[in-house]
Image (cartoon, rainbow, N blue to C red; front, side):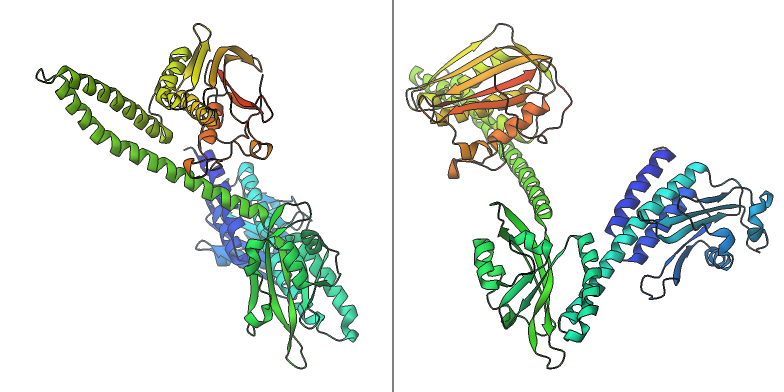
Length: 561
């Protein structure tokens, strides 16, 4: 890995570390460490605002390197000359002893021949601090180095500003809770605090609510009311809202007698689903603290925040889904491997019996049938292993031969329902791809067609040369005479783990099929009828050559010709 690539990777890692920082000091430490590595400075420091102090001019600093403390002492003593105070005004000196602007450094006992100071500004133009770097050698900090440190400064500013907003949110929330219990004489002060709190809450996309224990009424601000579909700042019966909006399966997460479950100093917190006005289900996070009367000490209600966390929950669900799929693949591979070992032994035994001249002819015919059935079991085991991984290499595939092989594989299954299957494929229909995966596609579609078909009906398979979006390839159509796909099922047909077969299906067949087709660079779609004459047609387009596309990532295709 060359230096430029390692520097860019370090910038990405630093951004992730800063985004995950929980304290200002941790963010400063990450930014300073990255700056030292990117610039190869001998010593450095990060001078930044003291967010805990009421005096906006108070500063803190963090240093690194053997001369770090002396370096920062020099900078704070002569800040007017050495620390930039304007956005995008980076100060870079490569030859201290030849530069008139560096008199302050030359008068210092600390040897500094290369100097770089990058201001840290928020997007709104507020300066939060400055990253300063030094080195006793000349020409250490190039213009490219300065641009890298400017990127770190921008990342640090975003992380520090977000943490400051969180600190402000907590501080203002405490002030607001106290203001809610104050007398009328403090109402004006409460309004001022509420405005400041609202700014902080808006930045974090938090809604607020208060609940009065005596009246049993709950009041939401505009954002909270929008989540629940109620009027903002209107008193609403909490029990009524609980029964109408909370998902029935999550009612136990919102106790009817919430105060009886909370002790003094407890925090109320819950994540639950609500039924929005547009009939969608949203995940929300609710938290609150007990409000007490400052004169009597009596617990008079609750006050807290509400936040829409649907996106986070969806991401968590997607992660769990991926873990399920990975586990399913490993299980399929394990089963196939374990079946293959005894299967090979049984196949060898049958072969030995078939070659024994003392075996009667009638038994020989039975052994021949057993051998054919074992071959079918072996092919099924190989297909199961292919669900987890396909070890074959891309090759030219005779589509007519492949489709007839798939039909032969499921001939007994079709015979049990007295189904006919016709295969009509244009001559010399070939594609280039992974044979195991393409066979899996048509096996899955044929199994679905067999299970959907009525007794004594016909399944039709047709293949022809086709072109889609200027790409040459083949189009394969597979139709059945089943009941058709209901509208409520059609939108979820290609979703993983969705099945209408109850305990008989895994819900992975069409999802895997679509993934293979799109990885090949093709598309899959369907047309269905639930009114007589009923039935479903699936059409698969596969390009003649493999294209570079993401598998399992794009939404299900819906083309049909």
